[in-house]
Length: 515
Image (cartoon, rainbow, N blue to C red):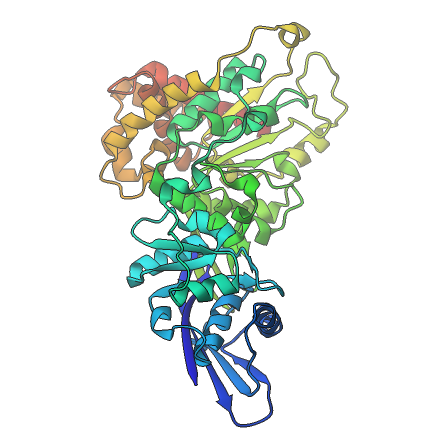
């Protein structure tokens, strides 16, 4: 007898339909045959499924059984096929209503006892179920929260194989999970909240951070050890505007495909902050693997990618970031396939001015030789620096500043100004489809000509700065984008000379340090 269920396979961050076909009662020795390009985890599913069925009170097939995962050319990986395979076997044995099965997409791992375990990618599966017009999605209880964020598709959480069978046989009622019941709309607990008021001094860095967040610009902080660079970077998401629901679904779809949402520590309505260690590989940063998956730059989509100790990263790892930072997406080609992942990130980098960290510090003496400093700074290429809009110095704090008990300006106050500037940009770029592209940093050349006009005197000033600082044509455009953001923060219709001068000075520091 034949039993059929519908499931899904993840390719990058998208789900593709997989049909699970089971044929029992075949002549021959009692054994299982699994076909359809499965990986090792899928091949092992037959042992989990048989134990789960037996411990759930169901008789296992005593005949030759063939399981086919179609289409055969699409590679299947992971334990998410346990539940659809078990239900297809039971349907072929007339223990489950096969007429109901075609109305649902099903995914879930099974324990030997028959209990369900969470699987990754259920958000993408819910989107697929919506596109296919399915009645709903049947997934483990722990994976239902993220899937419930998709409108117009019912999410049915099941805790065991037995519960899923009784639901399909109309013997047990399961209420679909409502969107407002999802735990992903909660805010972080008080113990995990951080605020810019905890940062002492560093007014110039605060200003640069506010400009960077307001326009979605990349930022480089250069300063001595202990000056607060990492502390400031970790607080940048607290002043970023709250993500819109479509932005949050983009964030969550990537996190779900990578499996990070399986931990309850990551289930908060906030922008991502990723801080990979400097020993990370090219694949870990950009994405890839035998079956291509998201890397750190995609996991930081619509959020912050923080690279601490920037010169310590492998040069090859840094160079692969150049094109994705420009395009807002990364294409990964492997023998298993080719995928394109979004990676619209705000890059925040931090570094010391020299190997010992104290070059230019008035309170400490630098022990580095000139060749050592040159080798250290030359690890960062000019093309990568050109893609970082703002370069700011984070000087070492004085003892008086550290002892000051007066709290600094809070994240809430800074976020209000950033949101006001972003509101201006949302209005300006309202024809842009993606919410992540409605910021000054993502302006095209035609938009720069339209929204970043300057008069002849300002043009001469910018030309003089370009010649003195030996800046590239890319830097020219980025100065205008930053100047437009500074004007937005000042609620100015046009770019004033003061706005342009401030934008220029954020490009001068790297030339003084690196050339």
